[in-house]
Length: 224
Image (tube, rainbow, N blue to C red; front, side, top):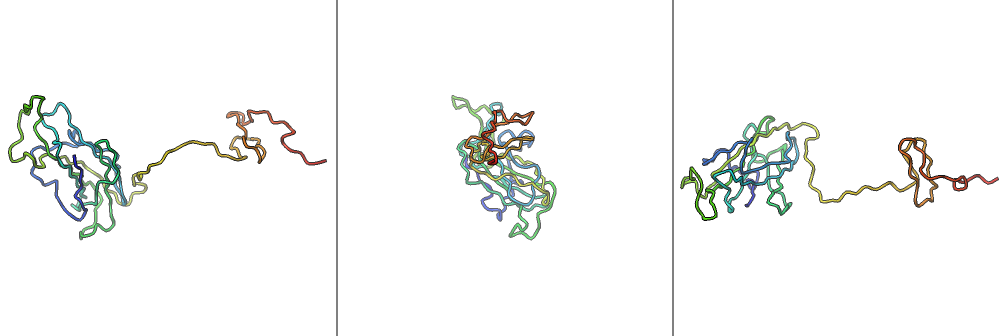
């Protein structure tokens, strides 16, 4: 499968107006799966994952040569900037993004708050069995074969000025947990080790006392 948005947000494809053979339902998209898209889109860039499915209980399936196109629109029909990211997950899933711009460029209208749409289209073919026999009860008509003949429209919500609506950026990093090196402790009424200590002390979580015995000779006394 080849994933693509509308290539550049300045172009309009109006995927929601295509003449298609089969219209999907966002509650049961059958062939497309969207994950990670925030419930509300504000100013900024929002990442999400797009993957395809070929359920065995369907009489149609996505063609292996199908291009997958998607397009975002606001409630006032402004096309939003969207694209497939450069992240290669190597698992049949595409990491994509949509961006809400203060200035949509090449458009005289401002993006309005409210319910918009994410439209995805692809090309279906009749499902076949090992013998090559088609099992579709209602075969795809000739005029739709090889065309963008399936569409599913997902609702989105835009609220441009909502706080903390940006989805996380994609980072490739590893996380590890370490104790802080030094002579400080957040335990209640703790006894800090000597500043030259290379090991430090551990403390009882309930009492706040050190688990190791601290001898007076290790604490340091003022010279007599």
